[in-house]
Length: 447
Image (cartoon, rainbow, N blue to C red; front, side, top):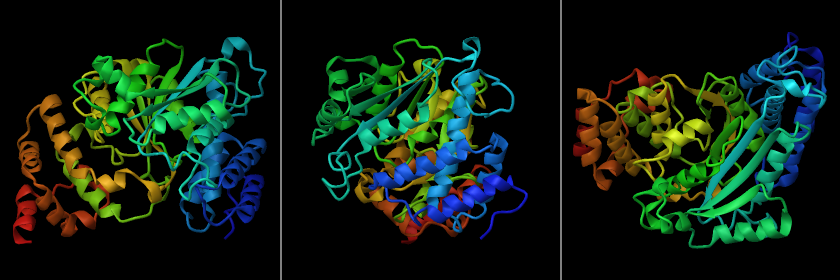
């Protein structure tokens, strides 16, 4: 299939050549394919294409997702991310056409300081942290995340920096210690650190209260601790981002989230897998469960109606916002993302922006798929509703319904999710409320 002629013709020809050279799939365990994606992004950046040209190419590819290799879709996201970061390095308004390539010779008075802190938690990641030749599920994700950030920040001025924080969430397989060993043997810089949630609990830090053991945390406690830690040092242009341990989201896309936060009108930018220009490869059977989950939580937290993908592990916040929202969290498990977003939105309505990203599932070694945390997350959201929002009759009824659900009830619902939910897209659930509590109780009763 040929790209349309109304695109920049040189860029269209380059994209066709890159597509012809790309593999049909994208193997997370193969670092050569990731390098190929960055090389393709570099080729796009080296062309005369403007930011508008890259935006247009992305939009066209989004309408032909199956016709072009995943690697090309990712490369365009990476190129746009790098261009946006380069524009930030030149100052809030840039010079000339927004997204023109940074040459390293901008007037120092026009350079905007930027510091990106990336945080992720590890729990039973002792296989994926290894190289592919060491384990079938090995992704070498720690060293490769470092490489992704190095690629993104390459050639930017010294005022644009990054750091990376790994937080061991009480891993029984000692993922944190393994991370320290890998860093000691393969990476010598001081901008990557490993923290342990157990230490925060022992020190009785307020940010992780009321945790008494790491067993009471499932990612949320570790991320809260990591975010709190990285914002303790004031830095100009500081943004704190958290992601997942695996390689599902290439960190070269961080510029996509940084951009709206540096323009001063947004407090949080979240990666979304459910936008028209999102690129998603998802395995497994979690989609229908996810639809039921989204339908139910949208009955509780109306403030977040405009957000569909709350669980994508790729979210960035301005550091001063993190300082205000990270304390006194109800949730230290998997629903912590939603509480952070809710507190951000309550702090400043309309301050959370959704960013379409490329995301490739790493289901093979997923720890969350084993836990199937949707029901506990819904129970946590019912608590959030009661803590943060004024009572509303419909929301009250759904909160009470969720609070009384047993595991057996939930499994019955999963076996027969009402078609009115499964046949709709989650983006509709902010306005569609056609399935009542009585309807859901009838499904449970009739099974």
